[in-house]
Amino acid sequence: MILTRLRQQNFRNLASLELVLPPGPLALVGPNASGKTNLLEAIFLALGGEVRGALADRVRFGAPEARLFAEVETQLGVVRFEQRFGRGGREIRLNEAPASLRELSEYAGAVWIRPEDIALVRGGPEERRRWLDLALMRFSPRYRALLSAYEKTLRQRNAALRTSPRGLGVWNERLAGYGEQVLHWRRRILERLAPLAAAAYRELDAAPLELELRETAPPERLAEVLEANLQEELERGVTLAGPHRDDVRLLLGSLDAVKFASRGEARSVALALRLAEHRLLAEHHGEPPLLLVDDFAAELDARRQAALLAYAAQLPQAVLSGTHAPEGWTRTLRIEAGVWNLEA
Image 1 (tube, rainbow, N blue to C red):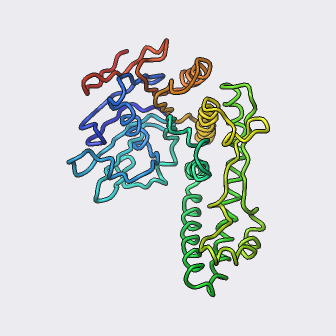
Image 2 (image 1 turned 90 degrees about the horizontal axis):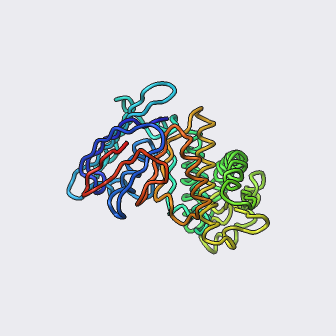
């Protein structure tokens, strides 16, 4: 998948911009706080990526809405993605026809690697659950609907725990049913991601990396565990077991990376998770997603930088940002005084 044209209006600090992009490796170069990250985020969103926070907050101050347009070459032909969003909501179009995020996920899209990804290791279980769930949504539109149904039922059960416990039998049954399916889906995707993450980590470091699901209840026993926890849950007013309390264990050898990894190791583990996601999407779609890397040199030593750059350089297209271009990268998109200039 190759992004050939990007057009945006009023996204963050980018007032108006149109770019024609070449295939292969491309470096975004400019000083810190010059707009490189905003441009990468615009590309990621334009291709169907999902981010935290309200999209309306990404509209340039004083503008009513932001617009994104991306034209890409895929193995099936040219595809055009369009979005507009603001206080009035979000509109998505695919080849000029109304579309949904689910339809955008039918394309390889983009994988965005950021320094903030270290939260996948340093952060709490919710960070790793979110990574796994967002990856799943890109492979199965059904999973998005399933997770939404589980989360809605969870809110209803928690409300019943606090206000009307006599009706808990119905909510237990529904939550266990949805939860069992969520757990099965997560197991399936992790079985595919784990060896890819291990292979990616071997390119960055010598230690073995393993990924395991840490479940508060196995799928076949979720209903039983909900019943066993009932008294404590009534006292606390929350559901204590289920997919919403699970975690992904990251093991370096026999050590839990969440607890014991150095900052450099944590950065490498987070990078391996994103590269595994990229490789699995490439397998699934038959072509690699666009790879986006924000601040490619952040907290990576020379060996790890070299491994990342070698992977990016062999892709149909990769866009990496930094204060300087990687050695040997001849195509550069440089920002100076707010103006982007392509140097080939």
